[in-house]
Image (cartoon, rainbow, N blue to C red; front, side):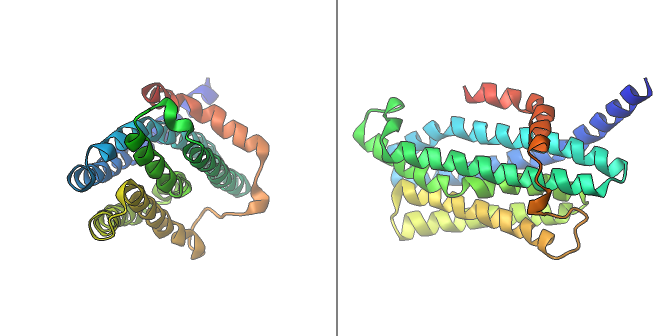
Length: 252
């Protein structure tokens, strides 16, 4: 009974800690989506809007992937910190970041391969729309690792009471996305490739702004490649998959 109460208390604390994180990420995603839509509709036209619409389910998939990793890793890190087991904190923190990078790179490679081989024809047969979608997928793929990794760092920084830094990273992401969309679409006329590239640049800036904190030596959580544990990655996904189910359903 005592263990059950302890787990319930931990889950409750985790829920209220992650709630602002999820809300803010939704706001960031919505704000950047509005910027992309405004530029796409006014500068490129219908093909760009089609590409954005067809890419939308993938956004749900990426968010589901992030939520699964965030929920599971935060729970395990929270438990380890409560027991003052800092070696375990390092293991789960490092494992989560490594798994995030590996899975996001795999998704990026698959997207680029699908676009280059025209496998995306299953979604749209119109030549102009297909070309726009493929260009948008390729340029967006470069930013997926930065997006998924950035979302992990966003949550961990919240645990370390660095919410000011997460707000700065969010604001910088929005500003960079707006500037790059204007530069790539209005000035350089890069079409849907530029639209996706602007998003990729913004997500990498978002990630790097937060990543710098973990290179200063001030962070409580330390990253180490040697701390990676394959079994911990399965534990993280097992603990976190329930929080991602709704996003997977929305994707389909």
